[in-house]
Each structure stands twice: as structure tokens, then as C-alpha cells.
Image 1 (cartoon, helix red, strand yellow):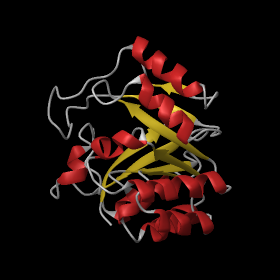
Image 2: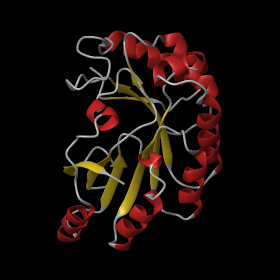
Image 3: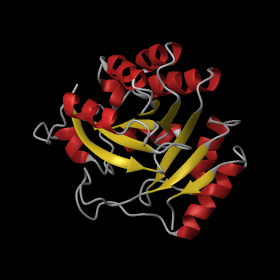
Image 4: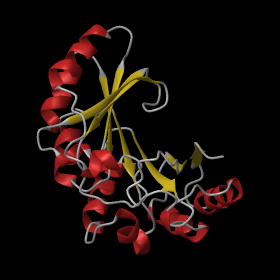
Length: 231
């Protein structure tokens, strides 16, 4: 497994934890609005060695209490459980980000108790999923992962990045019906990192007014839904 970077401290990425965030390289999706495109498509991205990563974690014991694993797509890597076991052996809680494309691997991690919190992307309504994810035939596996989380005991959230050109309030009404009853769901603001897969100026953040309309649409089904990083 190739690690592509480390954010040494975050109060935002792991709810309730003072954490660091580590980025894995590679993804099976091609979301055109992806803001970490160098991690997705570039084999030349600078690598963070695992020895260096674990040396960092040992030095931060007592200062940090969580590690957020993101990407790319962490579950692209079949050896992810081994990485999580090593992190937890140092006393850290683990948050795992995933696009939901690998339900079998997710199930093994959940059953082994290797994740304390999971954040799964819900890219769009079912009708627009392939457009937004940039790949075909992915929906059945995404739905399997959603079911695993909803039927399991591991705390989780679903989240959707709101992109002006890709989402409308009607899409969020459809998402709401899809995930009705979910406790934690967030509509996240799109951020142009300068590293967008589709290139500069292809996508934009929605207006606060549109974001509010999308939130209202989803709350008919998910009353506790919230905006995150919007406006």
C-alpha cells in the first residue's frame, strides 16, 4: 500500500477526536470534481513511507487520539486491515473514509472491529450516480456497503459533496428517500483545491441559497441532516 501524504493534526476530520489524517494513493472512481486528483491518477505522487508514518504516530501518542484514513480510496488496498491493526495497536481510534465500492473488504473491517467510525460518500441520486462517480456498474456494491453500515453497530455517517453543476434539490430529495432514517448525514461544500480531476473552472460550489434548498429537500426524510463547510 502506498501512502501519499499526512496532515499532522485535524479537529474536523474525525468527530470527537484530535486526529491526524493519512492519505492513501489510488482510487477506482473518477469523480470529475475530485479535489485530490494527484492521489487518484498520478503514480509519481510523493510517497509517505510506512516506517515514517508509524514513527510519527509513536511520537504523538498522548497528543493525538485518532487517525483518519482517506484517499483516494483506502479500501482499494487489500492490506488495509493490517495497517489498521498496527494503528490500533498504538492506542489510536480509527476513522475510515470510503466510497463504498468494496463491501466485502468493508465487512471484514467492521466484523474485526478495526474501525471506530466510518464516513461513506453518497455521490448523488441513483439516477445520477454513474455520472457523478465517473464509472459504470458501481451502484449494487455501493448499496451493499450502505446496508452493512446501516445494519451494523459501528458509528457512521453518509455525506454528499454538493457541486453546483451536478446536483439539484430534487437529487437530495431522492437521496433522502434512499437513506431515510439515517442519523448522521452531511451535505458538504465543494472546494476547488486547484487539483480538480476535470481541470480548472469545470465545477463550482453551490450558492448558500441552493445549499439551503438541498438541505430542506433531504430533511423531509433525514431530519438531522446538516450542512458542512457550506457558505
